[in-house]
Amino acid sequence: MNTMVLDVCSLLENEEALTKEQFEQLIREVRSSERQRLHFQEYFDQTVQQRSASLCQHAVSAMKVAQGYYALSQYDQAAEWLEKAGAGRQECWLKASCLRELKEYDAAIGQFEAAEAKGADTFDAAMAIVECLRRKGDLEQADKKLKKFSRVGEIRAEFHYQMGKLHDANGRREEAMAEFERAIVLDGNHARALFALAYACDLYGQEKQAIEYYQRSLQSADIYVSALLNLAVLYEDDGQYDEAYDCALQVLLAYPRHPRANLFLKDIASSMTMYYDEDRERRVDRRNQVLQIPISDFELSVRSRNCLRKMNIRYLGDLLRVTEAELLTYKNFGETSLQEIKAILTAKSLRLGQMLEEHSDNKSQSAEDAQEEQQADNEIITTSVSQLGLSVRARKCLQRLNLNTLGELTRCTEAELLGCKNFGLTSLEEIKKCLKEKGLSLRQLDE
Image (cartoon, rainbow, N blue to C red; front, side):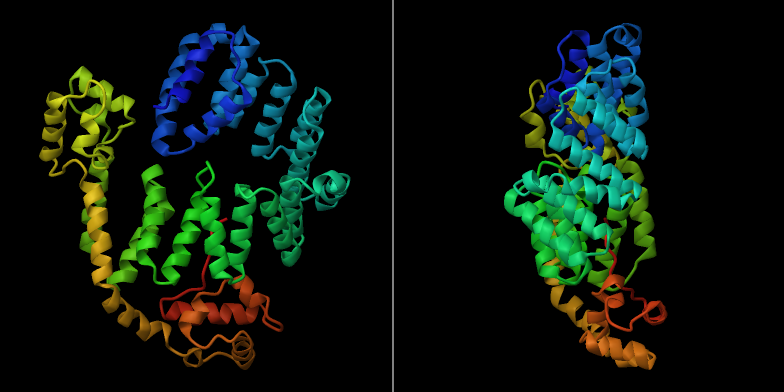
C-alpha cells in the first residue's frame, strides 16, 4: 500500500492534521483502483475500531477519520464524524462536500456559506454553490450566482467550466462547448472540462475531436473510467481494436469486477471474430472465479504473506499480472517465497505473468485477423439504409444527414438524429426497431 495511504492511519495517533495537499493525494490514491480501496478500507476500519473511543475526544482526529471515510466515498459516515470534529472552515467545507454527494443540496449550500464566513475562498465557495444549484435543478439561481463573478471569472477555468455545464443543462450545446474550450485554454489540465468537451463532441458526432479530448482528460491524476470506456467505443467504431482493448483493460486492471468493462471485452471479441462461443464464455467465467480467490485462502509463510500484502497483491489473479523478476526485486522476497507461490499457481494451472503474456498474444492475434474481420464487417456496415424499409419522413431525414449505410447510421447517437429538422421520436423509434432486427443499435455514451 502507498505510504500516504498508511500515513492517514498512523496520523490518527497524534495531533497532526492532514494538509490540503495530503488529503487530495489520499483521495486520488484510495480511488485509483479497487484493490487500493479495499486495502485502505481494511486497514482504516481496523484502526478506527481499535481507537474509536479516544478518537471521538479529539477534534483533529475526528476530522481525519471523516477524511478517510470521504476518500472511501462513504459520505454518511464521514458526515457523522464531522459532527465530532468541530465547525471550522475545513470541517464546514468537507461537510458541505459530503452533503452535496448525498444530494442534500440546500444543506450543502448552507455549509459552503458557513465555510466562506470562516475564511474559505469566496470564488471557490461560489463555484461550489453554483454546482449545488445546478445539480438540484435551480438553473435560474445558478445563473444569477455565476453572473456575479463574471468579471473575476473571465480568467478562471472553473468559472468557464461551471458556465459550460449550466449552458448544457439549458440545452445550449454550442455555448456550452465554447465555455469548455475557454476553460481548457486557461487550464489545459482541467480534467472535468476536458471530459465534458469530449463528451459533447462524442455526443454530436465529432469523433476525432472527442478522441483527442478524452485522451487529454486521461493525462490528469484522476482515473476517468467513463472516459476510458467512451474512448474504447470510439476506437472500436474506427476499427482500432487494439486501442479499444487497451482502454477496457486499463479499467479492469484498476477495477477487475467492473461490469461494463467486462461486457465490452466480450463485445470486442465478438466484433473481431463475429462469433460468440458460449462454451468458451463459461470457461472464462469459471476461470474468473478462480482468479478472484483471495490470497488469504492459501497456506503461505508469514514472510510471503506480508510481502504480497505490501505489494497490494490481494487476489490470485493479481499474481498473473506480475513477473518473477518483479517479485524478486521486492525487499525480503526470496527464492523460497517465489517457489511457494509458483506451487500454488501450478496447482491451478496458472503461472506468474500469464495475463501480461495473454494480452500480448491477443494483440498479435487481432492484427493477424484484422483483414478477415474487416471483410465480415463490410457485409453489414456497407448495407444501404434504403433496405431498412423506413417511412418517407425518416428516409428524408437520413438523406439530409448524409447517412447512406448502416455503418454510418450506427455511429450516430439519438441526440444527433433528434437534432435534425422534422425528425421526431416516432422516426427515432422506427429506426431503432429496424436496427434491432439486424442486431445493431445506435451509439450510446457513458457520462
